[in-house]
Image (tube, rainbow, N blue to C red):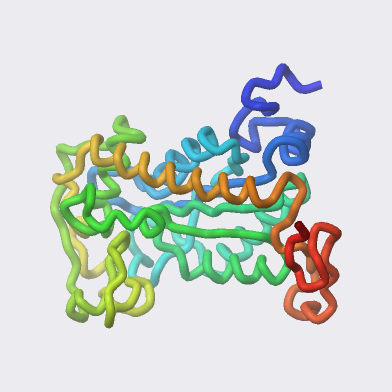
Length: 302
């Protein structure tokens, strides 16, 4: 028997801290939404730890799980990286194919315990793999949403003086709020890269959209950082404060919790929003059979 349950029929918000029985019963009777925080091992200048992206994802996801009741899946420390990050000392990138497969396997495994709705919360620029993983999982019938917290928040300099880039005001503010003991602001230095095109052609992380611009990961806008950056920083971390970090985290958590609440209200425990499981993936899309919660067109029955 599991020990006395504390948090709404679970021992912990973390999947790996519960017994298998507790996780299964929680998904069946309380909440079958699972959050997967993902980050990376990546140098963050001389002042922040290499685990910053993962620590940021975990810190946000923990608060979302506490507020929403969703289960929190263990976070893989490693992530995939845009081309310009490769070769930097302190950065350990996964190949895109490796990371896509990792995300797929985690979601598939958590679904065995009864979880039917998945939210991936990323704190690192790895949409090159998360977008592919989400759509591959969709072909298999796994309802999965993936977002990067700063793009989900779209702060657009409401809290920050500058748009978010790397080891800068934004990321350092989160670090000062979530794990200040690992930050040495005495070593913080301003840095920047060499742009290949005018900034008007790309949208910065967290920036509002604008006509005639591309998302910053939609092109090879930057030189290789290992050659271009002296300190591994893009932006000014000296502008960071714990108060800014708290505001950013709080706002992101509230939006994620609101999203999860809508999912819970629309789809009760045990209901897969997509209405099918399709191990054959693309090859079997012509033979999908929807479950009893959905009609022959895949629409949720009223």
